[in-house]
Image 1 (cartoon, rainbow, N blue to C red):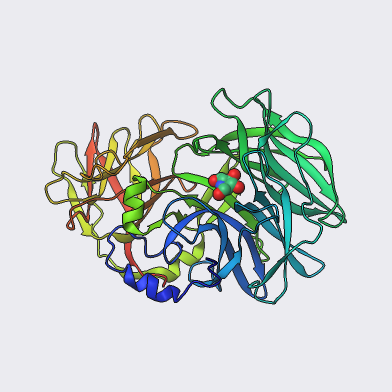
Image 2: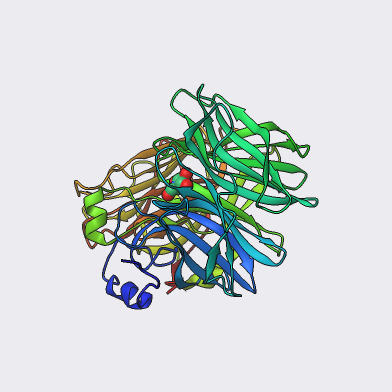
Length: 478
Ligand code: DQQ
């Protein structure tokens, strides 16, 4: 069976309208499984998002490239499937991750074929219409048949291509047989014939990491950023910022973008308006059976604009277009929170944006979202000003046994502080938080109780004052 088009995607979306866990203002396919974003490109006045997609079910397998377009990076329109596996084409078992570049005015996908556990050839496909709906696979495929000497052939994939002078350059994620993780550098005049130039950068990352998946390499100001996803078992997304001489990258600053098993395989694109924007796969935090029962799995993070802070650290924020989705504004008083006092209930919602700034000499802010009236289900966002520590805790989000909660804690750079901004997006099961205008934590929560919708604030270990408090109901994007 070949699925050429998504049959009535809006009807599929409507059929899931009653699903309380399904995000409403983040991109996800009409149904079934999605993972990595691929092929981000702005073309003919449209943003294009391609994505790893299983049209046959809500778990990973037989990966195609799904496709959606947008005028504003926020509202999306479903398109037919763009790339599908094909016997004997090098992508017999799947069309894995890759990117799209415009070569001589023709968008060309450079992607990973999956043809067996040791067969990840690099392939190209060219778009043959203005809307990037129809694709023809390159007659010269594979353009890179196998990894270089010393690289384990089972861990070599995910080309990311850019233009440098009159040549194309690419990094491909890999792991050497000695355990070194690497972003391998290649160069080409035509996207067909590629020269291997050695590792752009390689290191023994840790004993648990065997390769870097989905490397991205892009300039930011006068620096370059290498972004890598830690394999196996989805161990987080890591970045290096540094300098690049056209052959070698010299890192100066490094850190986690996020260290969890939820946010993974981002793709970054510099758009014509000058912004550098990141999308990423946000995994479910529940069992395969629960995903099957829901009929869908995987969400894209809200598009995040990237920047470097004063110390060269990579930071992000939701793109400004988020303001288009703001609906009713919640009228709110700015509370003074004292330890021992009952929590202040701000409003009731599962689909909102909330911004605030907290101030205190020490003390902890505790924010419960998706909280049930009896408090048995609640998702906690918090910060300890005295320690400069922040967290997102989903261990008590749900009474369901099909759900995995996790407490993510991280230390903010610079430690202790007296003032901290917090920016929260809650979109049903999808939770994104930015602390200090740049440091994000992403999580998933699936409360069982229909009334688990309260947002409450309290303080512990010291008084906290809240200011710049604003919150909006968010519109759905479909
Ligand atoms: N997902 C793709 C691979 C990539 C992985 C397969 C990362 O190309 O390495 O679906 O999530």
